[in-house]
Image (cartoon, rainbow, N blue to C red):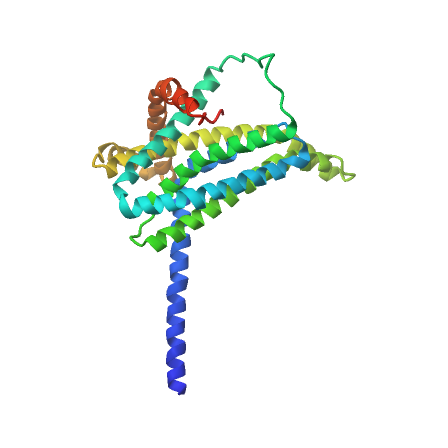
Length: 318
């Protein structure tokens, strides 16, 4: 009896080790897959605060919470099942979808740079434009943010799916679930901190302690610079990741030459250190992304944009 019990305990321990290893593997692959979507993540965190701008301070966090709930619904209820169905029944569709996501990032990055260099004319607000009450405006903003999030979440889930190395649909489901929840918490947690940073700074600036007052004033003065830096980093990440995604998808579709060429050129910087080699590759992918984005801008603004507007699926309005 004792030996049988010990054998059973050994089996349970072995199963527990396998389960723990599986959990570690899921989390590890999910982390790597999420990291591949860096451009979309930073873009999401940089874009979302504008949907909260102009509202009373007490409405900021509730609005962020509404958008976060819509985001998790987008990822878990719509996009995760769609990703699993594609992986199981039409895996050949994933590289083209991945390329579309890369095109989108390249276009967004190039468009931001173009608007920085050539700011669009501000035609002002039409005099007969209907003024909405605060509650209606809030609902409008939330719907717009969730619509934007759906596009970015689709990119993130497609990129994550393509980065997973497994043939198990259960493993894919678990890893994508971790990515969906982790990304949502990370992005909207960061957004909540960003939108409340000014309030925190003002409170600290009113403190009786000189050190806290200085910290508060520094936060208030520093937030505009921080947001500008976030936009710059987000744009650079979009171009780098977008260019890399497009060339990687092209390689998966049987044209590995462009991706291999950049890797070979970046490897020439290897004697200067691993970081320099990575930076050289990122810069080249970024240049490729910028060129792709410039090519796509006329197509997106004159064909795709008007088409989406006609269908009631207007653009992001960055």
